[in-house]
Image (cartoon, helix red, strand yellow):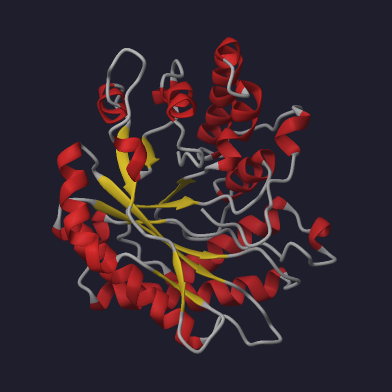
Length: 316
């Protein structure tokens, strides 16, 4: 679970949701959220831990341009060791670091430079986290922005993941204590044929890409939603967990932000009187994704869950 709006009231609404621990095992916090408290004075970190939900922390400092290019790498390595040690002391037990790559076929992007720069940064982050007791979530996000086909998306995803796992190996990462948070293999947001692509094709291409690049020792794959609607994200995850004939030795699960919380946050609208209905919406999506990771999700008739959450060049 990855809250994108770290306001105290919003977080309290999400974290106090009854039965949330049935479907959510971890929550990624922002630095400003870690020491925030509920109305009755309990720190969010302590609240989550008391419910059996592991608190984690977003540790990257955002994106920066790679000199001489229009591509990006991620900031924050210089202060990461101290930050990891500090947040472990606060009770966090895992971390997340996001790299961003973009497909532009005409520009031959992502370039080899951008891929290698981001792979090295992710691996160095993972090593520093493990040295300081935090399980690293490695997030090489390939943005959905663009006109690229699903075939091109798969090719780039395989190339990026190959580089990431080579870098992780070079940094002596303990794979049994590491998680991957990748994009699903989907066509670009402006691809004219994107509506023709089924959940089954997305699932097949995604799992094939993983099976060709991800080491079997890795604990699990926790997908980002990448601007998909709540329902799309659940259906695609469900389709992956129903696949036959493709090796998938890792747990395939979810680490969604908008695709888990959008309906809940809209229902809440910042009003105390809406907390109960917002929590019901959150639990509904959490349950849907819990079923999807078992390949048992049957789909939803809730129209709001089909709302596209794509934002061009999304930043957080």
